[in-house]
Image (tube, rainbow, N blue to C red; front, side, top):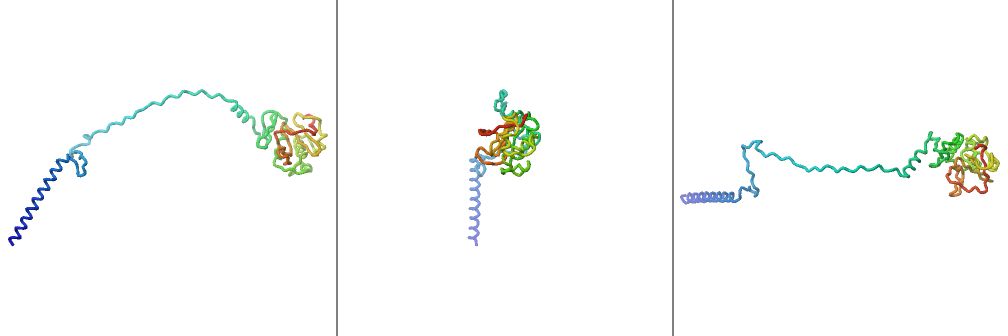
Amino acid sequence: MLAAIVRVRWRFIALLAFSFVCAGLAYAQERTSGGRGSFGVPLQPFSLHETADASPRAEPIRVAYYPPRTQPALAPRAKSAEDEDDLETTNAFREINSNRPVVVGDRAMLRNGIAYAPSQAPDNIKNAIWAVNTLRRKPYVWGGGHGSFNDYGYDCSGAVSFALHYAGLLDAPLPSNDFRRYGKRGRGRWITIYSRDGHTFALIAGLRLDTTDMRDGGAVGPRWYADGRDTHGFDARHPAGW
């Protein structure tokens, strides 16, 4: 019994001595670490008695400012000849309404298959041009436009008869051979009719009214064309006074 008590006492003394040794080692390590935490990070000093006024104030950030460079004023660009041409082209075309387009001047002009009547043309010439515009999608039909001025298709002399009728210059449709004796000989101021056996076409205010497309030689129906065609073998006639 006495031996057991002695063993317990020695164990307690050994444990106490071990605790003192560990405490001494920890104190020595803290002194050599220079105030660093357990992860080696320097500890920041602080005080529980510091007030908000004691905290350092942030300095304003200064940003460099460079004033923009002044750009020299550019001289206005002079209008080129192309600009003037575009302006003239835009101003030249105007429409009284969608069915009665007009172009400034004394010659008709073609745009997208539609003829613009010249502003200086007499009213009956304008009416003829506007009337023919309604035929531009009609097909070629042999004999078309002869039974009536209003038909589902037209041949060459039927289309020319239609134009002259709406100009107030023809009461009944004529075939090509009869146009060789129509009106006066030669070219007219506003209308010239070219006729031969089997074909007739007309020039009205500078545009050609024809049922033949000269590019492929086919009969396509009444259409306006800005280009001319060979008149060899045709008789030129015109309405008296026109």
